[in-house]
Length: 287
Image 1 (cartoon, rainbow, N blue to C red):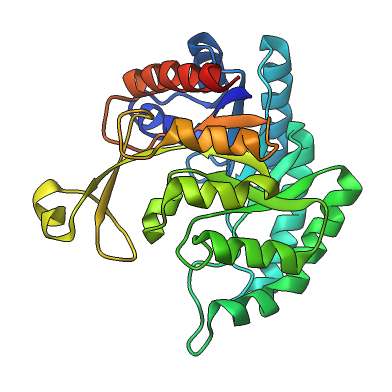
Image 2 (cartoon, rainbow, N blue to C red):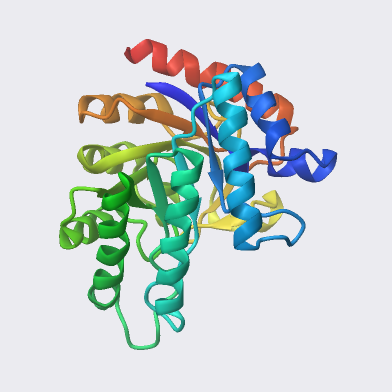
């Protein structure tokens, strides 16, 4: 497995330093990462299609120069609620950005909120033709599309599996985030074992966890479906059995890139370097 990092992990660092995409690529390479994935290219409100395309090409050129792979591009979407058709149009453009980056995978959301009276099975039926439309265009470009287990509606492993089987496209799979299962109070290792055979990309994320009564006192900012409280932390410092989950992915046939995703309050440079060291040790132990 190769070790990647999400551009999202640099959010606090970029906000503090003003670093751009090229600078974080250099930082990722210097730390030791093999790859860097990107999420929703944008800068100071400049999110025009022209800017995104120019930036994607510049990022790819720089990453090729320094020997840094780009395994995935991640974008938002709502394929169930109002504006779903416009979301498809935007996703089709995002595929062009993915191609410009040279990334083999594009992850897109399905929905984060169900319309009144709709359950997740209804959402699958509504979103299905739109997901297939995007996946079919992706296939023409040599790209694999996927959803990530996050956002409550499609976070539990059984629901994600049900959706993937319904889509029934060889180039549509699962971005398995081993930490996100906790947000729906699902056990990470058992959930990863379900995800493994569908996984086309992976995130290594870690959380600290508190009981519901400790949430306010602890200041933890992510509430789980069952009322517990989570806070992002350095990979290897939390309660997620990351190493065991990576082992499950490997046993299930996944041997691609695992991207570190950090969203805790720790100092970013420390969190990224220590997280990389911990993740490398974990991956080396299952090689």
